[in-house]
Image (cartoon, rainbow, N blue to C red; front, side):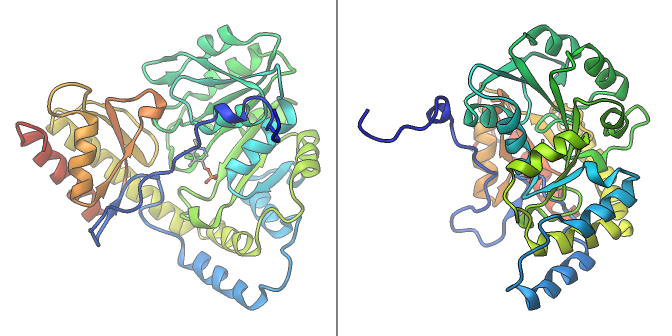
Length: 367
Ligand SMILES: *Cc1c(COP(=O)(O)O)cnc(C)c1O
């Protein structure tokens, strides 16, 4: 080699591709491809964002003190265990860089979020996939692939793109059977949407053990995906590791201000959850009416089965919808070639999407 070479693994990475945001020649787009909040950001968050404009020459607070205090108060947490990032993606990457490298294994689940294997490879570690059961993480399958080389286990709860979740009892069973040296990362990007009695984001697990981290985001229910803001709750020792590797001003001032305002606008969050409850149920009812199978979801999206053969494949559906300005997310990269994932949108967007799907299914040739 006569040119600089990156560390092993990097060149094997297929870069992450976000959801489609445009369709050629169409002005009005129904973007249901990235699980952004249908109800948008809180007006209070938008006002807080604007107010930061007068102080753009100032560095942000590198410690995110006000935001962390707000999170500690809202969730009843030890503030020293709260860390913030430029999206939860940044936290996930730094955790992997800190805890897994060449020769180490990072476990994730069959249809789990792609950031985990990509992050592992970026760190020179080996991603290891654990089978799922009915599109749901399986504690036994995860434990079966854990070896002495395993450094981390990632569990998205609920998972994207399946929308399924594990009850707290199962997450506790997983934690109890993992070696204490393995870091369990519970990615709760959709936690605020879930209202199930047997679900918990896992704060109690973080507080009771030295090897559990919970990551959260402002990109989903809080509607701040464009600002890039995530946080995590971890044992203080892990928080200190993160502070060593993160850049000193990793969270910008606008994100900190808007995030705190969004957090405190509980009425807006409640309205977002109520909107999702209503329209997620509607989507599932409509899929039943159209005899489309779907993966039962507790998130703000629904992954719907089309097929891989005949005229009505997932690919044909995506193309049919795209020509009408409706953009779902293809999930073939997640091993779900026969499916499309639809974010729950505003009423008119949901109705437009289902009407187009119905029209697609009524065609004999899928075009
Ligand atoms: C959307 C999403 C995130 C959030 O990523 P950000 O970097 O905070 O925008 C994290 N995990 C999962 C599973 C997601 O779907």
